[in-house]
Length: 331
View (cartoon, rainbow, N blue to C red):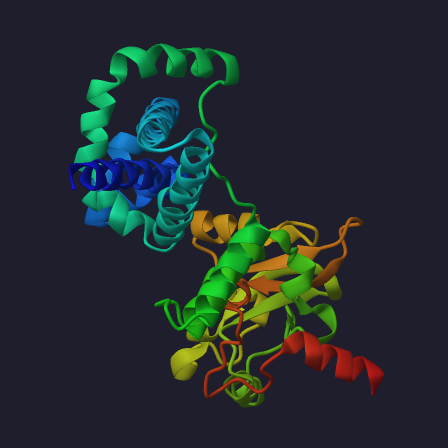
């Protein structure tokens, strides 16, 4: 009876070392750290023992090899050599490798946390042997490199999470997160309102009831002011400046602001967003490489790229001004 207990005990340790090797070493330390800092108690228990990867790996492998060697020797003392080899092989492969690794592969963080105290014990006991080997590995191979994902991989990761019923990520969050990760790859010319549909006023135009009605109907709050043509922008007219009708009879150029912001059409949207935030101006005139006016970009245009949907209020006539410009050009 005592022999069976010894065999079972050795198999249990073999299974434990094998499962922990797969379960713990399969985790990236930085991912465990993020989970721990996010409040995952199991990750908080595992991270300290996983932080030194080479020491943990060396300890688990030494322990596994030692237990399997003792098990083989013990079985060989109970029966003939061939039977001992076959018995030890079958027991170790099935109960010491396959089953525990299958279990830890599915419940790695939970089981790893439950046995974290055992790992600490073996790290202490085997430290005199394991530490020199781990130190040598550190010098030969260097420190573990963290898993760093590209933006495309992060987008795919978010998409996979949204598709899984085990995840808390919903469709709206997927759209916004993926938009935030990819909007900096887009340029101003991809999101601006094209020149052909820009609503602007000549600086010499007189403010009258007809102009006020035009402003009310278009639903915009800012209008470029030009001299001669749109390539010469001289200011900005704000709809708030027309409230109350006190400026009726005046020239548009005399009422509007003289401050105009410009940006190039090949500017990235993240740089455009930074400019809007820094200057507190929410509209810029977009120029091409020759200095010609090709459109306007607003803060709303950039935000639409981030949330990947059109922001349309009750006064908007066209949801997508770029699509409207294409239709206008064809017609």
